[in-house]
Image (cartoon, rainbow over the protein chains, first blue to last red):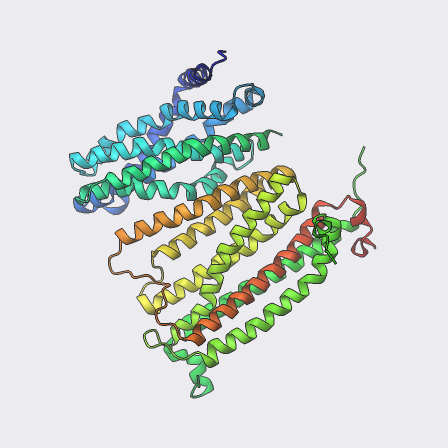
Amino acid sequence: MNGSIGGAFACVVQRDLLLALRRRADALNTLAFFIIVVSLFPLGVGAEPALLRAIAPGVVWVAALLASMLALQRLFAGDHADGTLEQIVLAPQPLGLIVGAKVAAHWLVSGLPLVIVAPLLGLQFGLPAESLGVLMLSLAIGTPTLGLIGAIGAALTLGLRGGGVLVSLLVLPLYIPVLIFGAGAVEAGASGVGAGAHLSLLGAFLVAALFFAPWATSIALRISLE
Amino acid sequence: MSWGSVSAFFAMGGYATYVWGSYAVTAVVIVVEIALLALRSRAARRELRQPVALRD
Amino acid sequence: MAINWFKYAAPNTFYPLAGRMAPWFFGAAAVLTAIGLYIGFFVAPTDAQQGEAYRIIFIHVPAAWMSMFVYVVMAFWAAIGLAFNTRLSSMMATALAPTGALMTFIALWTGALWGKPTWGTWWVWDARLTSELILLFLYIGFIALQAAIDEPRRADRAGAVLALVGVVNVPIIYFSVQWWNTLHQGASVNLTKSPNMAATMLWGMLIMALAFWMYAIGAALIRVRAIILERERAVDWVRELPEAAR
């Protein structure tokens, strides 16, 4: 492994991507869940076009939230099961950096597909073209933030029984600001106010998460592995 | 603040359900918390009287 | 005469101290409640707009204040326990959580019952009630996490990280919900705003807030004593307590 910071980062990303590739089903499951959940809403509330257009940003965003949350299990579980995680914590490279790399790889596998598919789902709900763009952009900025925040929850609940539901309980309240501004961006764009303010705030959340979440996650990992 | 009569006090200007509903539930919650605390303390003391497993 | 406060940082000295203090706090809570409710029902006048329904604020607002205050104090003790590795601080945080959660529940319940006669619906998605709901989720998450971890020190530290992440997020959540609420105003108005409060109403509310505070401290002290007994059962000073004798 390279001694340089960038090298270590790239190395971990590459490794995690390779591992994810070998278990493609996991990544595809997240995407499938996302699509299915979004499709449930018209079945539940009726297919009236105006209604669907109104709820579309919120529905897509909530589905993205839930899908991100379900995918969190895969962030550390694999490495924890075979003992690699303990080695990672002991490694000379800063743990925050390695965590950042794992979250980045995790996003590429679980978050990016959601961003790409979202416009198609938006079309199903009758969203106009400009809204689709804002939707994609808000998800592109928001889903990494969700991954970073979620990593803290995943680290805290490492190896615990009832893991999935427990992580949801911990992490969903923290997701709420991202949800508000993510869905809000699309609505603001549609109403003519412009999505700039919302997207800027989403960007601010991302930057804040980039600074604090890997650090908090490292602390949580050390606590969980003692 | 003078209530016309005892029944006026309990009627709360027509809002009896809401006002007394709030106060009643609050009282119940407090009583339940204290009861659970008492149970927990008692259980902890009972546990103390059990022999502790010998440590190596 | 300087009191050596650090003397009470150990479970064995704090345990009897808490036992002596708790009744005083409960007593103060009872007296303050009597005074507060007397003012609330027999001194404060009827409200011009809301009639007698407003009298719910004598519970709703104090409970809401306490729910937030207890969360901050809980996070504080959890942080101390994490930073200085002191068991008692972490136990205090664990002891505060259920009381805080119940305060939050009371605030939500009374908020709903206040909303129905004044605004027509059982639940109003105004900024403060919605933030209060999210606060309840934060409490539940903390309690659930600690309940899921068997090893006490891991539970202490993991809970501390969660509480600190939570406390940092509370202003962000509140600000976000405020923004969201102003956008989706519609006919809803700020439910918990009490315009033109008569001085007597304010006094009643403040005294009830103090009463809730005293109660919360008393409850936390009793709970931390139970936690000390549960966690330190094998330690000598505990085995020598009168409670432990047959």
